[in-house]
Structures are given as structure tokens and as C-alpha cells.
Image 1: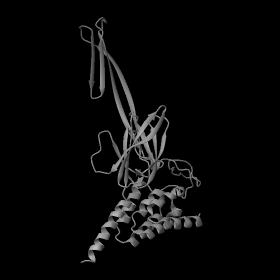
Image 2: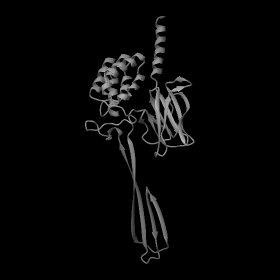
Image 3: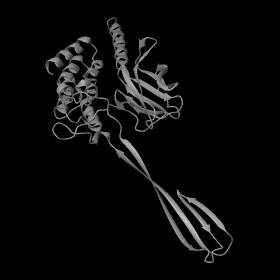
Length: 323
């Protein structure tokens, strides 16, 4: 019994340490003067339409580059590196709130508060977005106005001006009794709005060296190892398949099978690495995925998935030897 108690204590401490290590942070951005904006995290737009208050959840990175793009494009973008720290200490499992403020003619992103995440309903007016390494679909609305004028005989009587609005259809009628024919003129106006959604992962983005099309990753200008990374839906299915396996070796085998016939973003490679329990498996998969990654210039972001500096050094040596 005496031997079991220290073991249980050690296990609880280690469990808390690992939970702290892999805890995710949330980032809240809001405009003090109510300007609507898009949030871009590490080069990827997060919200599909401009908002005044956006919370991005599920951020695993210890630091992100946040960009605010104002609606309409008349105001300059704002860039800010955000380190998830508070009072000089790194924090995980925290919600950090930043304000988009105007100082003279310049906009800046300023810290406002930081606190441990508490699962509560979001305040009114706040849009909550789960962090994604791929941009959301683009939604566009088109409004069409149709006017119809008809003329006909009106009954005798005084001058009349009648307006009616029913279910979005406006009708105005004028009757001129001085006209011997007492004609009445009516004009009806109807408005129709159609919405078109375009998936950003299927957009024709430009010519590839082989004459086909190549995906464009916002904010990335480095080399490409393939033309198209896995679509978000396919990637989520792939992760579910990996997680369904009980043993580390089986997970690794499935992950290699998936990557054998697909290409991933660096951020997707990192997400797969985080499905493994052991450091060696993470390192082996990072090496295997190096030549099958769309944006190898972003491979440094995988460093956060490792627990030991030696793993980072090992991966860097492998990359240098396989460029």
C-alpha cells in the first residue's frame, strides 16, 4: 500500500502536466468603435463574414500572427504577433482578449485581459469560430429588384394615392379623376436575394508547373511539394480513422497509408502528430510527411508538437539531408 500511494501521486501529477501541456487557448478580438473585420490567424482567414467581435478557439500554438482585415478595404490591415503569456508567464487553457483600437489615424491590436477558460455561453454579438488551417467558404448575396407598371380604368371618385407592402412586395397606386378615362396607374416592386457559396478549397487558384491547378495558401509564398492538400472534410475523416485504432503502431500504419496517397498542409501534419502518444512516433511521422507536405516552408510550426528539444534537432537534421 505504501508503494502504491507514491505511484498514484506521481501519476496524477504527470496527468495534470500533460493536460497542461496540450491545453488549448482561445483568442477574442473586438473593435472598440464597432468596425467590422475579418480575423486571419497565421495567414488563414477564420470568419466567413465580417464581424465586430470574434472568438477563435482551439489554438494550440504558443504564439500566433493575427491580422485584422477591415470590411470594405478602406482601412489598412493590422498585424500583431500574439504570445499567449500573462504577467511574463506562458499560459495554456486561457482566454486572451484583445481590442482593435484607433490611435489617431492608426489602428492597433491591444491586450485587454486574460483568464482561464470557463465554459459559458458567448455574450450577445460575439461570433465563435473553431480555429481552422483552411479558410472558410465565401458566401456572396445578390439582390435583384423587379418593377412592373400597369395602367387601367379606375372608378369615379376623388384623387387617391394608395401604397401597400405585402411580404416584401411594394405596390403604389395613383388615380387621376380629372382624366376622362379615370385611368389608374399601379407600380409593383419586388426584391429577390440569392446566396451563392463558393468553397475556397475548390477555387481555381492559378497554373501549376504541370499545367494543372494549384491551391493557394493565403500568406504563404514558399515552395510546394504538391498541388493540392487534403480537403477539410477528407482530413477530418482521416483523423477519425487514425484515432479509432487502439495501439500506437496501428495508428502510425494508418497515418502512413493515408499520406501515401494524399498531400497535407504543415498544420494538418501537426494535427496528426498530436494523435500519437509517444515522442518517437511523432518524430517518425514528421520525417515521413516531409516530402508529402504542401507548404514545407511552414514546417517549423511542427516544433510545438514535440516535448523535447532533441526531437526538433533530429527533425532539422533529417530535413537538411533530404532537401
